[in-house]
Length: 513
Image (cartoon, rainbow, N blue to C red; front, top):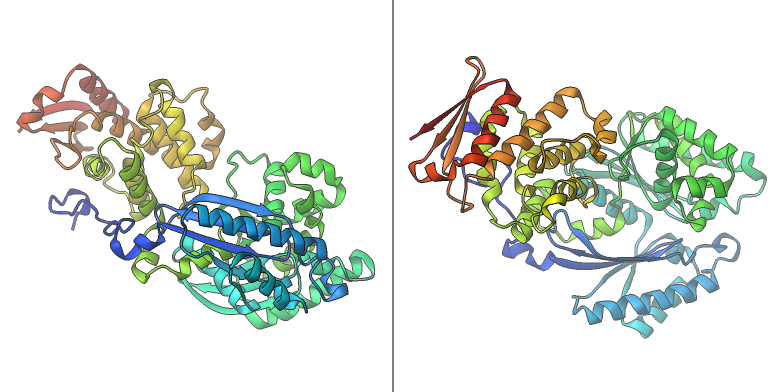
């Protein structure tokens, strides 16, 4: 079937029926989770399209609960008090927001400390919050599920580094497999005697044992955790990488080696200033980079990708029905944005069908970007007309969208930029164009021009009044107008249609059915 030209195709095809407003997932429209880690304590409240949620609230306190744990066997006293105050605040915030009960999980520091049960009991007494202390395998599973929130069909090895532990989990075709935990967290590594040489020997031994457990299959390495993200920021700065989005940022083994060398020869304060990393986090980076270097040398992944999603997002994923897990996170988020912010919700699907004849050879990956652009084309209409192009561009490059890599994100941004303007010279998008091929740039501009024209031909979202027919062999772009749309095709729409035809190198033709 020619999906692009099928007049009976439901408006929500080919990416499944929208689920963000389905009664079965309404309870996930606002969910709060608390992560009590060895280094930090954080509250995240997710809001919106549950499959690709926005961060309604996100607060972190660097408590250092696990600092000194290897020596004392107990939670850090100062960190414990800071954590108690933070958790009391988090529960008070949830109460004032009329939230459902928070889901709280504690990881390595609390589970390993002899006073961990006492800490949980004190939290319960002071705040009413129940903390679930999870073991290493469960921590690995939840972190891997967090990765699946952003990569639904992911395959590879998830590596989640916290303060006191590091977890590995296998992903195969969107399912979590074998899992293992280790004591390779930076706070634990700080206590190893004998300097860096002894520490590296210890890391190599532990990683070798993990490698024997997981096998030698080369695959993608997904990095979860604040120390990995700090290293990625340093790598971005070293490379002069133009898109400052950590999620789905990819590195090679060579990148890791060069960044490790940079960290070794550069003063901590200079690295902090270069990469905008906090002092508390920067203290852990030298230990984390030794672990990452050894992981990459031992497992030899095909590439390394940063995931901004981890255990907290995995706790949200845990609550999702299967049909929501299987939905496309990018499309679901764009549908939610259109329903919330567009002037004519539903119009994006009509526009999608209108522009499709211009892309007869688009594969599914490209079709979903075209669909996403059409759904988002009008969500920034409240911005001043002089700034709508820039606002759309910012939305695509900076919004919490998942399920797309950096090149796809820039493609979407470029298309939305051209939805509102013919020119990009002097815009911020120019620095990002190296992430696209010349063909991608041309196609994104064509999509933007098509949306710019098509946006003028409907008054209601669900009633198409025109269609396009692109005959590449004859070099003719035909516009078919319904009789009731004749008066819509005024001077400005005609100018935009001619510009669209010119971009194709085609002759414009208009027919009233």
